[in-house]
Image 1 (cartoon, helix red, strand yellow):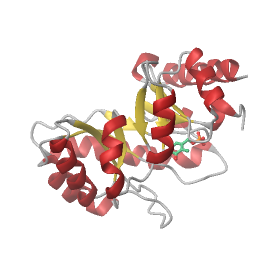
Image 2: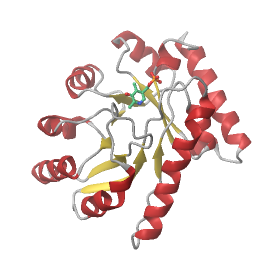
Image 3: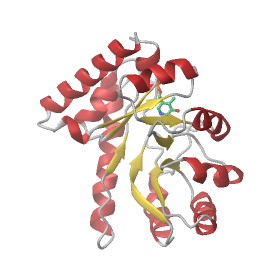
Length: 227
Ligand SMILES: *Cc1c(COP(=O)(O)O)cnc(C)c1O
């Protein structure tokens, strides 16, 4: 039952907030629809979901057209190829997965053409796993410095994916690391006030919220229930 799944997830987010003295309203639940059918997505919207996350531009375009007029906010959470930037900017409200200066520059030039200011998060490969996208932590501050120069790309914060681990606790160090990087960036660059921390998915969103996530990206727990 999707409604019951959503209710349980929200309860678990609320409890994680309570443990840390946080206000649950600070945490946005992004409903990751990449593997869901249109009917299931419409159900989830009926139960209050308005923020949707997709990882492929082509799939997102189809769903975007089918769901127009429902007041949704679209999140791009997957690796974005430069040749998909043009379409991506037409539909996405926030790009979580800016992982190179090259991609940011492609977004910048397309944003100028479309006369847009594009909200973006920088994806960091906090675990250093070779099968993951994301900026290497050692290169992060240099990459950020270059991207901050782009007038039409507005960096709001950071995103990461923790490694697959058998229990949530194993993900905690990677979330702590991302939060520290955000704080360090704000100290390092004059006037910078990054606020968004997009971290936590089905396997680890409670620990992510405990560590300061204000955007969690959840798919399977919504559409498949307890996993
Ligand atoms: C698929 C995906 C998610 C959601 O994962 P679930 O395990 O279904 O909750 C979150 N973030 C990214 C980047 C994803 O690709």
